[in-house]
Structures are given as C-alpha cells and as structure tokens.
Image (cartoon, rainbow, N blue to C red; front, side):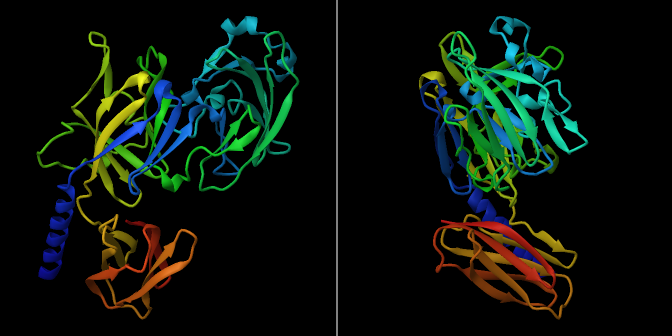
Length: 423
C-alpha cells in the first residue's frame, strides 16, 4: 500500500510539472470577412483551414438509420421552408419570400440541421412504412449572401440522400438537377456537398483529428422566451470526441487551478461559442472577457485549459487564444473489474511513456500491451505480468516516428485502446 501511495504521489508531481509549463499561443486565421473555417486539434497542435463557401449542405452519414442535414451558415447561407407540399415545386415564387419560414441549424448539437426543423415528420420528409424510406415533403429555398437563390427538395433517404435542386436565373428557375449523396466512412460525421460543383467535397478532418471548429454560425442572442437568431463568429466543439466546461475565472492566472467537476462538462457544441468577446461601440474594437476560461476534455481523458486573448473582427478575421495541458492525473481506465490501465505523458515528448496498470487478481492468461499505427499495423508489443498488483513499466518508443498511435492492453478476453501522440 505504501508503494502505491508513493507512486500516486509521484504521478501527481509529474502532472503538476506539466501543468506549470508555459501556455501555447494560437492564432486562428479565419481571414478578412471570415472567408475560412478552421478546425483545430489540441493533441497534435494542428489547424485545418478550408474555404467557407466551398460547400452548401452537410449530410449526416454515421448510420444507415439516422438522418440529419445542415446548411452552411458559416458561408452566410439562409434556408427557408417555402412550401410543405412538394407538388408546389414548379410554383415557388420569390415574391412570396416574406411568407416563408426561416430555419436554423441547432447551435447545441451537430445532429440537428436546419432542414431537420421543417414541418415534415423528419423535418424535410415523412417516413414511408411500405418501403422504409423517408420521402421528401417540403420545398426549401436557399438564399446566399450575394442575393442568389436555389430551391431544393430532399426527395429520398434510404442509406443515402437523393436531392433535387434548381438555380434562380434572375427571371426564372433553371432546369432541375439531381444528385445522390451516399452514406460513407463513419470516421466522418458528415458528407459535405457543393451545389455549385455538384460533388462531395472535403471539409472537416476525420472526427478523431479535430477538437474545435472556428467560423460563423447562427445562434440565439435573445432569450428562450424571445429568441433572436444572429450570425455570430466563434468556436464549436466536436461532441463526438470532446466535452467542454466553461468556468468564470481569470484566464491569465498564476493561481493554482482547480479542475472542474465532471458534471460541469457539456456536450453542447456552443459551450465555447461566441460570448467570450463583446464589441466596444466607443472604440470600435472587440473586448475579450478575461473572466471566462474553458476546459476541453478529450476522450482519452486529457484536459486542456484555454482562454481567449484577442479578436480582430471581420477586418482581419483573426482570433487568438492560449492553452496548455492541465491533466491533473494520469488516470486509470477500467478494462474490466480486474484490470485498470493508463499511461503518461500524452503527448510523449521524448518517445518514452510510463505505463501504469493495476491487476486485482492473478491470471493464467498472458497479458500484453501493443501499439498500432493508424493503418492498423502493429509497431510495438511487450508482455506485462499476470500477477495481481499495482505496476509501472517504462516503454521506450524511440523506434517509432512522430505521429498518432493506438495503445491497446490485452488481458485475457478483454481489451481496451487509447490514443497516444508521439512528438
């Protein structure tokens, strides 16, 4: 027991040393007039910038049984329900725009898009129990920032989406076009489609490769009783891999920090949002709220503390924040009732990590720890004891290149895997 307490104390000292390292300063270049979206990943310190206007609609593809369709509000595209009867397709008249209902993406979950909030059973369509398809029942009109228009119907969903759309030429609707957007690789939540190039385009990285998405989106700046949707600029988080806690405390502080309780972390994607800044009408600049700090916890248990330092508005499109890894303990995740498993540091800066594991009972099975590349190739393996006890083992990974790997523990019939970043 004394050995275990001393070890836990040493882990605490190690992680506090990490927590006292300097913050990393990050500049996110959304470009003047916010022409870019930028995806950021903490574990690899990478940014992925994409042109905001290179897509129109995002189609959920994580399951054959789930639908979800978002509009690209980062590019300022508005979507309206023009008719709840698809038979009105040929009769859509821009003169009736004032009677249309504007629809918005959810600002709290990625899985509900503007098209899902229409008047159909599924927002944009109704379920057909005869063939188990969802059939389009609503005609939408998309209005772009340049005052151009497209009308659209999502005609069918059955493991993929079939759409029909047409451009407004200025005097009439152009010839109808159709496209089918299939479900695909489930490592990506959405297929992004361009109605300009008529193709699926690459936008967001794979879900495992980004934590925050910066750009513009519609959010409620009013109240729940009197909502007012407004196009804001800020950050949305990847609820598939991270949760976020917002804390009222000074960002740039030398005081010892206290990590939020688990209950403080939210899956609402706008937890960071846009309210960390406010426009100063007197000086025509943005003031940063220095009393707002955010803790971003990823699926591997790493926690990053961040606070914003600057925002240039539409003239520069730049925002800045500082962050550092403040994971308080290495953590032990349950593989089953008999085995606990963890390792530190992560990211590994010198290609060495310390494995910690707790075996509650003796076992006749061989226990191993293996490391795999993202292509699935096994690049490292070592045996660990099968005798009950609490152990540490240093792993020298100098033979591995910098990158992202999967560390897997095997104990009898049970396995568990965690992501490792080697720098």
